[in-house]
Image (cartoon, rainbow, N blue to C red):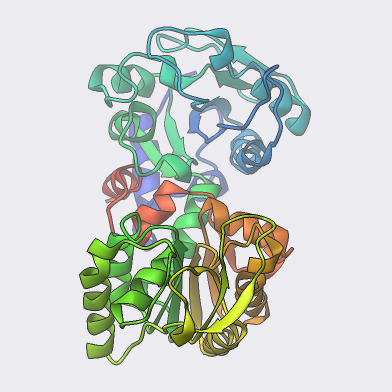
Length: 414
């Protein structure tokens, strides 16, 4: 196939005038993909059992729309992904994408051949899909080698990043190839993530409410600081809430806390108050004497926590107060359950807030593994505006960090 890269790049530049990045769907709609070689970086890093069988295929199913767009547009399609944690240059059986190729074949209704040792050339024709073996086996992938990226760029006319979950990493298949490919664009999954995050944090409808919960303030401190300057309500939960409770002088007993970060929590409260915003502090809590599935739960006023108590959930008054704030929000960002929701006696707080988000007419975006587990537990997936698959990338976006794989797509669109 002959590549008319210059004309394709010019057409792509026209398409990006009203968007910060070029979209695969726009290239397809413009008819520019026919007979072109399209290289898709997907996120096919799925869980497997000891026999190598795929136990959950959400990420594979999420990759299908991008592949179908390219196929229907008449392109020759190459797809690659990482899987697990292979050692570069040392391919082992457990690193293979062979089970993924089989599942892709089933979902697409056509054969998907797995290609080994593909960096120096790939034979693929229009209408075909090939899966390129685990990209992290290639020496130079994680270090974003220019030499590797340039070789991969020569394989294609159009590079597509559709792997938001890896967007916070600058690697050869997420960043380097996008620098050198004739055209670099976002697939539908990545574009949807960026659109949703932009809507929630770029120019959000207000009031903007964020729920940030988890065991440690330290792991979310930069997120809390970034959001303190943006949001109207900052709801904290889990071990993070304990640190904030201690910051306002409440006894938290034997609860999980990071005492050295109490001054940081005070500073965040002060930042919010100076803006006329607030960090709602729990007025009642659910306590136990031990952390276990069998622990007896006791509801207490936040001022009555004993020295031997462990706070494992917010109380019903606090949950109702926070649900009322959620009902007034126009935009909601949710990251983390507010209690130990895995144990039913400490799940009411998270369930109350989850159902309040589900009922809300606000635009809501949720992300993080525990958050997704809570959404599944309370069966509200179809009532959340957007569920991010990003994990670390979602958290870094909330922090206000530049995601390398997104930044390069925006540069290429200019």
